[in-house]
Length: 118
Image (cartoon, rainbow, N blue to C red; front, top):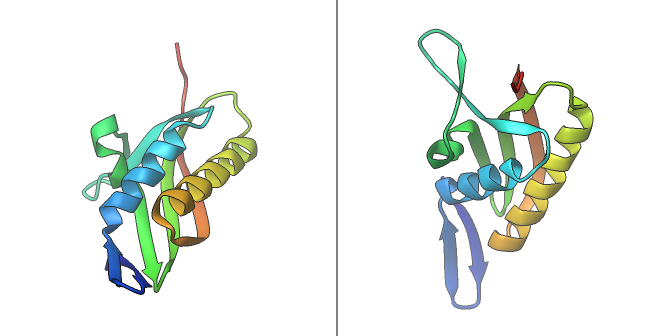
């Protein structure tokens, strides 16, 4: 269900893919994140997504004009997970609220893996 906002001229519907893309791109700007993760339904493994498919690692739940964002991420080894997660939450919340005008109630970060860079 798309997020819906009402003004004096009518309704503005924002598709969940748009919000997911904004959230994915915002998360990728954070230091320490390697990429977004997508769960392969057949075997339960998580795979690293390319930039074109970032929205597949994001789930959007909308309730009226408030949304909840779930991000599935892969982080870089050696970085403090809690600090990176807090930065991701702040950046995603700020960008989604600024660009869409919707209220973000929660941003949940699920760390699906750690990647060792060579």
